[in-house]
Image (tube, rainbow, N blue to C red; front, side):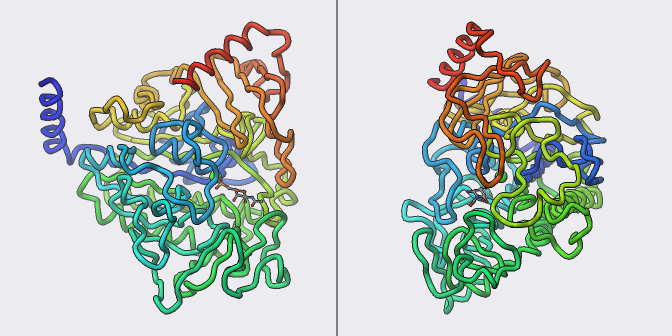
Length: 498
Ligand code: NG6
Ligand code: CA
């Protein structure tokens, strides 16, 4: 009976207040580090639009992606469940099956059920299709539309993985049925040149991996043939994604909408539009930071011009920390010019050290969130529960199992945030932050990743850092604090086995 009354109140409120609910725009950057934007301390590159968002919103200094790579972070964000609880959620190849189950309520599904129009625009990287993978030439049976999005316009995986085409709803955009797409991650298909065989054809050389089919002068991960009329141009990716996002906002300006805008920037291959080439002085990596900032500016301008800004919650964050050479020779290291992508933090993308997951996080909602800086601890896994709270959606027990309600922190009312943070590194190693302490469990793998030169934080010994006195994780205090190590290991194990 109680359930029915709850449901009735929910449906009543949903209908009555549908118009008042805030729009939600989640701008999710790729591989953007804590120190990559000027409002987080960058001085060699300027990001005026992101800075403006931070100025009128709340800027978080201790907000974390759940993982230090893309697929697991996105999985956790959209399901409210840690990706390390589910196998098969590591960096997905471009022909992976849909990783998110279609029988659960996801973050977009929850918002859709609350009366929102929902869209995923930009990078997907969560797999497509059923067990057999995606049927590129027909209907893509399982994808964003099956996990709660009303509309999608997405890059299937990453820009450095084939196929280099857009998926709009259930079909590949501009596909000519006479030139079908063939994709393999195992052997060469078709006879198009590859990075390994024809390096002289490359406009951007590879430094590691990325030696397969060449598309638009850039060799990728995976082999592809066909689909010529459907192939995007790397230099237009940001423009296309921004344009589609603006159209979605315009078309839904009279309803509450949720836009998950997952930018391709600043992931490799970094191929900025001519508007940004050479503009940062830091090479392509700096130029795509400017391009990302431009996207943010375009979205804010659209919201302003439609008079939606007051009632739109804009969240800006990144899926994992920064990397310089991520497999292409784009002079990210050579042209750094003193820029510090991770700020003061140790490690980077892939790492268990803080720079792997500590990312920029800004929440702006001029009507409701006061401007300022917050030291509250936040994890992206909490967005689901917090937004459910915001729209008064009654979560069921099985929904978003790892997600906590951090709406008070998000709104600036609670200064503490989450009691603890869990970080998940490339090799599966988990770290546990509680109070001032950070514990990194022992794990296998190299100390330094060969291509990227990133310190991965791997050690066969437990690590313990005092993040208040030593935020750069320079002194492992585990031998001096055996009890603390044991206590944190025990607590982490309990959460693992939950
Ligand atoms: C790595 C790729 C890297 C990037 C990453 C995924 C190589 C040498 N490296 O395997 O370029 O694609 O996967 O990045 O191939 S993520 O942000 O989508 O997780
Ligand atoms: Ca990423």
